[in-house]
Amino acid sequence: ENAQVNFTVTFSESVTGVDGSDFTISTIGSITGASISNVNGSGSLYTVTVNTGSGDGALHIDLIDNDSILDVNANPLGGTGVGNGNFTTGEFYTIDKTPPTVISILRADANPTSANTIRFVVNFSEAVHNVDFADFVLTTAGVTGASMTEIFRADNVYTVTVNTGTGNGTIRLDLIDNDSIVDSSNRPLGGVGAGNGNFVGEMYTVNKITHVIQTERIRSNGTNDGWVLESNEDSNKGGSKNSNDITFRIGDDAQDRQYRAILHFPTLHLPDNAVITKIILMMKVQSITGTDPFTTHGNIFIDIRYGPFGSFGPFGIKALQNSDFEAPASLYNVGRIQNNSVGGWYWAMLNPSAFSAIDKTGITQIRLAFQVDDNDNTGNNYLAFYSGDFVEQRDRPHLLIEYYVP
Image 1 (spheres, rainbow, N blue to C red):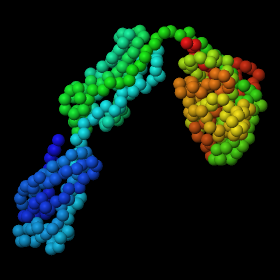
Image 2 (image 1 turned 45 degrees about the vertical axis):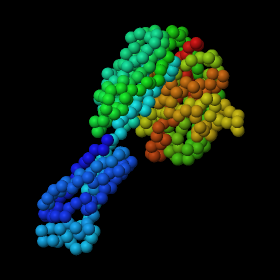
Image 3 (image 1 turned 180 degrees about the vertical axis):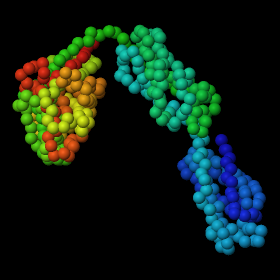
Image 4 (image 1 turned 45 degrees about the horizontal axis):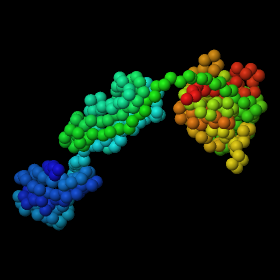
């Protein structure tokens, strides 16, 4: 394609001698071969036609004064002398000759799956419009009643939600180009012509065999759980610890040092081949000192560690360590505890990403800290929760882990 664009050049008075040699073309991007094909006009208004060449980007024209443009009194543009009538701040045209394409159609959820709904992520080469159900087809084998239920857009990425129907088998999402999908320049997907933008997506294997869900309640071990206090404000390093108290603290102290808590769960009794489907962390508050940190410090963030946070060389240390404050986690922010307690119990459902961090042959530790480390009010502001040392076992922190054995 070799489209043309027109620029209108307005002079302050009637002039003559305006031709293609008075202009140059400036381009941005991959445009090549652009040229001035015609200059037409009279008086103070002229139209410059530009052949846009090939490639995408932007272009504009500059007027380069060479004293050939004259008014009715033969006065040259800008006065005698080349360059003093230059004009280089004209408007740009954006040139978009490349049609949009599909980059990928990928699974967004675990595969194989037993879920009732699954998601596909459709990534286009640029932002496009008019994407709807008619642009896709589900290719299935073994399942019946599968259907698309929702399309969500975020710039050039669309997420298509699919109901998996009934039965076991496979589901694939394909895009069928009918020229209804266009970019901001109204260029159809793949270029003009139905079918040239078709794309075959990834496939889900659907297995809806019913598994027996089991629940394991694992309580925090009081010998190894507790709190770690920052060495000084903003050091981000542990300075002191307490693993013997019946409570642990989350918040800050009067020197604006942050309290973080470590919970210690012996997860070795889970079957080695357990497939975890849900994890809920629960802990019961004992008291609030100072201002409730939930009103000033945000939510409590949850980090998880496969094994202990503490280590000595290659060896893990289960006992609470000052360095547990800053030690690397296996995964960060796998859940958030909000100010939503019921009967004194605070809880959070962990993200599915945390399932892989559960050590089924050893221990799993969790680190708790408020989103904001302190509120700079030189006062104690913390929540005290019952720890694994509390005499009433039912009030100790615990993980509720749901799983099945395939």
